[in-house]
Length: 557
Image (cartoon, rainbow, N blue to C red; front, side, top):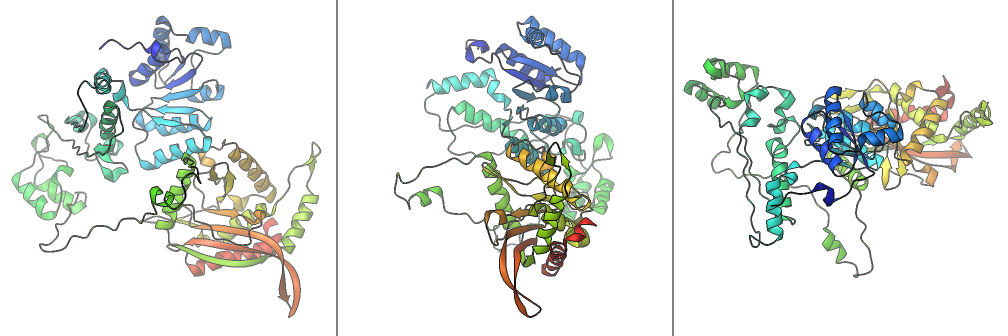
C-alpha cells in the first residue's frame, strides 16, 4: 500500500488545537499529526522541556507554531492548563493526559466552551464519564473518545481491500486479543490495587476487560468492515499466559477455597514465588476478602431469568398509526437523550410519593413589594429585585434546615445526611432543562439568592454553566406557576430525595373565622423518594415550608 499523505487528506489550516500530555507518547504523536495537517498546535504538559522539544521538532518539520505565535503576540507554551484555557484562542483540545487526569482537564476545557478529543479511556468509572458527558451537553460542545486502531496501517489496508471488493462479500469478522500484559506484575498486583483494577473488574464501575480492550476490537471490526455491523458477539478474556504470571496454589489451598466458595485467583499468595497456600485461603475466608463464587442451582430447579425492563412501542409501530407524509422526524440531540434517560431512571428506580398543600401568598407579596421598594440604587438601577421564586427557594432551604431528616440522599448502603440546603432550580433552555444550584441557600439573604439566580439562569440559557454549578444539590424547585399552571407533580432529580412543584398564585375563596374571604393562594406539591422521606416526614417538611411562606418575616431573621 502506498504511504498516506496527511496533507492531502484534509486541510486544518487556520485551526488551532491544544494538545495536553504532548511531551511524549500518544500526545506527542497527535500533536505532530495535527501539525502535518496544517493546524496550529499548542503543546501542553507538566514537562516543559518535553513540550519545547516537541514544538521544536514540529517547527523543524514545517509546522507553523512559531509564525502564529509571533503574529498574535502569544507565548509558544503555557505554564499551566489554566493559562491556556484563559487565553481562549484555540478551537478544540486533544486530551492525552494520564487516565486519572482526564476528568479534571476535560471539564476545565469543556466549561470554556471548547470541543475535546480525549484519548481512551475517557474515564476510570461511569460517574466521571457521565460528568464529562453532561458538561459537554450543557456547554453545547463535542466530547469525543479516540479509537486508535483506525490509524493502524494494517487496518487501513484491510478497509481498502474490503471497499475494493478484493476479498468478496464480508459476512463474518472474528478478532482475538490474547495477551497477558494486563496482569503483568509490572503494573502491580491487579487483584488488590484499585488504581487500575477497574480494567479487569466489573465491580469497580466499569465493563472490565471488554470495555477497556474490547472497544478497540469493536472499532476494528466496524471500521475494517467499512459498513455497519448487523450483529456483534464478543467473548474476550484476559489471562496470564507468560511464565511467572500464573496464579499458583497448592492442592490443599484449592480444595479449601472451593469448599468455602472463594476464588483462589483473588488471593495474594505468601508461599514461594507467590504460591497461594492453606494459610492464605483461611485468612481470606476470615477477612471476607475472597470473591465468592455463584452458588449452583439445585438439580431439577427451574432457572428464573430477571424480568426485562418494560419497553414502550417501537418507532415502526408508532409510525404505522399515521399516514405517511403527515409527519417529520427530528433526531434527538444529546441533551434531550440525557434528560430522557435520567427521568426514566428516576421513575423506574425511585418510589415517588406526593404531598400537596395550599399556601396563602398575601403576606409574602406585601413583604416582597416593601423589600423591592427599599432596594438601594446603584447606577440608576436597584441592586436587587426579588421574585416570588426567590422567596420560595429561601423558604424551602429553611424548611430543609428545620427538618434535617428530609434533607437527605439515598444510597444502597447509607442515608446521606446533608449539612446544608443546596437548592436546585429547574431552568428551561433550548432543547431541554438544566438545574443550577443555589449552594447553602439557608444561609444566604433573599437579595443574594435573587442575584445568584439571575446570573445562573442567564448563563444556563447561554450554556456557560460550570459542572459544579448544576451537578449535585440536596433538593430542587420546579416553578411552572409563572406559566399559569395551577398544580402539577415533578419527577425527582437524583441524588435528590425531594422536589417541590410550584403552581400559580391565584385569588380563591377561603373561609376565615367562619366567613368567606378572598386570598391569593398557591398550590405546591412535594415529590419524595419514599425510601428515605415517607409521607409523615414529607408532610412535616411541607408544613415548615408553608409556615415561612405565610409568615415570611421569618425568612429575614
